[in-house]
Amino acid sequence: MNPTVKSVLSRSIVLAVVASAALLPGCIIVSRHEEPATVVLPEGKYTGAIRAAQAISFSDERTAALTTIARKDDLEEIDQHRIVYLLRRDGGYSTDKTNVAIALVENPNCTAATKNMIGSYAKDIASFSSDRTRLAAALSK
Image (cartoon, rainbow, N blue to C red; front, side, top):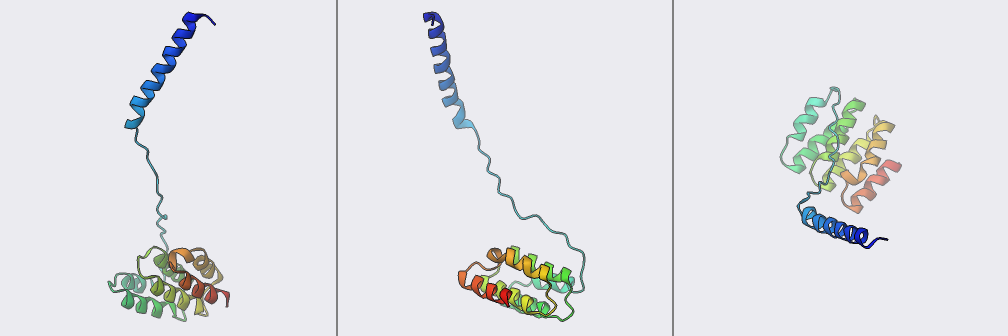
């Protein structure tokens, strides 16, 4: 290779490295954390009661209200799903959310689709392994 060409290539490489070193620290790396999509469900018979229970500040009172709804004989599948979505995204206590989910699973009108949803969101509903074990036991009955 010609010495002049070699010199020009060497300078170009050095210039590219220096430019990269100078410019890259200013780059911003954007990390994208996706939140679960907001699910819009049609209204069910107990939608208002579920929303009211969701607004309760104290976890034990919210759990009692949701458990009462989850045990309703005429709880429609749409409201079953609404409870599952609420449990999934609610920041309440793991044991409280697990108790509501178990009450829902034990409802004779709980559908297979609702049970599948609870199973697929078990880690979001039950943070502790002991709660996940209890939930899995209820689902397997």
